[in-house]
Length: 219
Image (cartoon, rainbow, N blue to C red; front, top):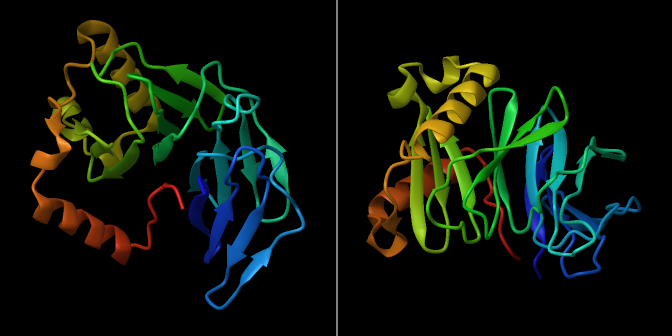
């Protein structure tokens, strides 16, 4: 249990599991294959995202690997820079040249710079700590679903620039400026997840399934 799954190179990759699990298994549509190349850390409740045909694995519940970040290219793993903050049960999505990371138990987001292999922690708070978050970025809107609330941040509305047209540098600069000014009040006020209209959630899930996107979650 507590493994992470993602579609990578047209196959489902199942990563880790319990506290001391380094297993990396692949489903090709017919059978599971256990890869000989093990994950170089205990991947328990890790965050995962595929960017430019590379698989990024962030953090772990295991105390020795909570700040670690490894990248898999389909053959081998490469260690990236450690994060200054713990990353437990996190979710990630790419916006421009950056990976946005929501971390369980934290009320601020992390932003990983793909070009400089470095992290920034936004200064503004959502006023609530994320709980098992899942991030989705679509049409200029960043949405975070967690076990209690739904948060949204509209880049297009706040900047007047469509999300697809915004460079990573512009997005990061704007987000940092807004967090410093108003403590993240540009986030839409939180609503209870139970109050979120189910048909809208179902429509979102349907779109994700059609796009072959898999949520980070526990298996």
